[in-house]
Image 1 (cartoon, rainbow, N blue to C red):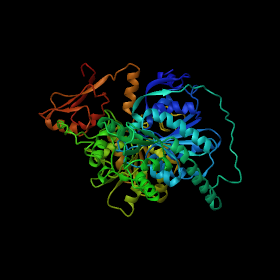
Image 2: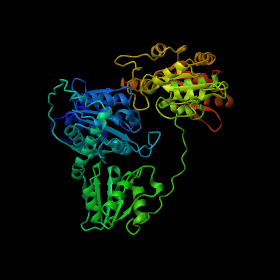
Image 3: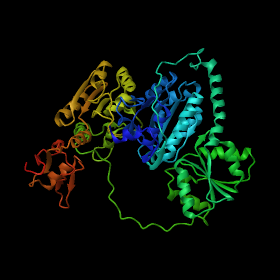
Image 4: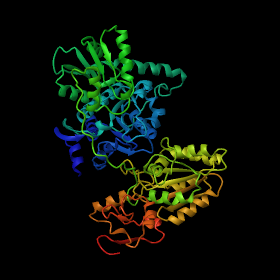
Amino acid sequence: MHPMAQRLLQSSAWSDLMMGNHALVRAMIEAGTRVVTSYPGSPTPEIADAIMTIPEEHRPFYFEFSSNEKVATEVAFGAAMNGHPSVVFFKSVGLNVAADTVVQLPLMRIQGGMVIVLGDDPGANSSQNEQDNRHFARMAYIPVFEPGSASQVYQHFLEAAALAAREQSVVFLRLSTHVCHQRERVDFAAYTASEHNWAPRFEAKGGEFIPITSAVFPMKQRALERLERLRTDAARLAHTWRPASGSRLGVIASGLSAAAARECIERAGADIDLLVLGLTYPLPVKSVSDFLRSHDEVYLLEELDRIGESELKSLAWEEKLSTTLHFRPDAYLMGELDPVRVWALFGKTWPDIFAAREERPALEATVVRVPTFCPGCGHRAAFFAIRDALPPDSITVGDIGCHTMGAFEPYRMGQSLLCMGHSVASGSGYAINNSSRKVIAFVGDSTFYHAAIPAIVNAIYYEHDVLLVVMENGTTAMTGQQTNPSSAEALRRIPIERILEGLGAPFVKKVDCYQHEKLQATVQEALAIKGFKAIIASHPCMLKFTRAMRRKGREMPMVMSVKAEATAAQCEAILRFDCPSFIRSDDGRVEIHPGLCIGDGSCRAASPEGMLELRKRGGQS
């Protein structure tokens, strides 16, 4: 059994250095979770990685990657309604996809209890925005736990699962990128495996699970009363860290911001109290009120939006408190609050304590590198072929996935981007009353199943003049190579071409991305047809393939090289392919780095003069 699985299933109490995402899985096991669902998205994929190390026959819960976040939420909900404690996890913007379902959950009596784990992303490290999902919690009346370390991830999940089971409700566990990925020594409790009664426990009592008009208000009242009860839990999970007693200065924070605040206070040797909130919604009114009363000045430290600030101002006004409150200036409403930024914030309010630090010496200028595809990526080969097959004024619409990087130089394919699965529908909009410019929409295979199918149905029905190019690489590559229904190793492969044909698409063709001329000809053939048409540009993810080869102890046998007689002009043409293994010399010549090149040969499409050749790795051509 994998070492990670052995640790996660260990029955005795133990302590180990553990990533927040991995500590969460142990907490799921200890809490008696029985159903776990997800759609992959950073910063949460390592949760699934840890789960997948446990063989199914030893896994104490059912786990699946659902086709999107809404489906994942509903599968977890159905299981919890049947009495099985459940968890669903996904990234920040995944909540947008699931929102139609999530806002209904607090109205229900969820018999097994349900925890939604959110991977929020202050700083937009791996997301298209900095969405603050605390707004959703308040809109939907869902309590929110906000851990700030790997240990707290473990502890807060146990609290959240217990609360969800007790209240027969749903709870948010809101993580952020560096809480997910932080490593800390975590003390785990003993665990004893127990049998679970899988008999269905769902009982529909008088239609209380059907939110029609007559039922909505009693259900909402129950949700509001639940929140009020939970203020007791919020108070229990709030604690004051006091480096010195009798301080008149205080800070209120939660999550990673609390850890940054504590580090700054310790480093400054400051006489400042820190109130750390664990369950941040509902607000523990009495704990916060007492903290404000006992301090002359209090700084509320929170990332992103002014959610806690509004609540604190309201509380101070209602309680007629004289405490001076401090909040972040507008310049700090974006990005993560690390100790450097927090020190600067505190320094603006308490300059005598947090003196301005000396400027760090400027680092040498580094070369700005544009994100690019891996060596051998089929997406690069596809974009190289398609770019030259399109009229120069074509409108290209991108989507979420590895192929998003096609928007950068030298391809500039995908000139607008919103969210998962938007490209076909947005492309349809671009095509309305547009007879002069071709519209091409791109979507990855995982996103095709996730969110594109309804838009495709719409485009076929209304005969929108859009060419859809499905970038099929057989995996959910950008988030960690998870399987999807297009994967060769999928439980039951559902071919994309059969779906398109079944929906009535009049033109569907599949071409290997490495077949440069055939792909170009197919694009031109499709563009000559009015209405919706689809091309599946297919090639396996080569990063996944080469990793599998290395795990077997094998190396890619071939490598590309540039012939010695290649001219500078020929090398310039080769560079149009933009492989990261290319090295340009000062004299304009191109060399190929043998450690990066995988010898796939797809770059030969950029060298019509035959200046690129395959040779054995470490040998002759």
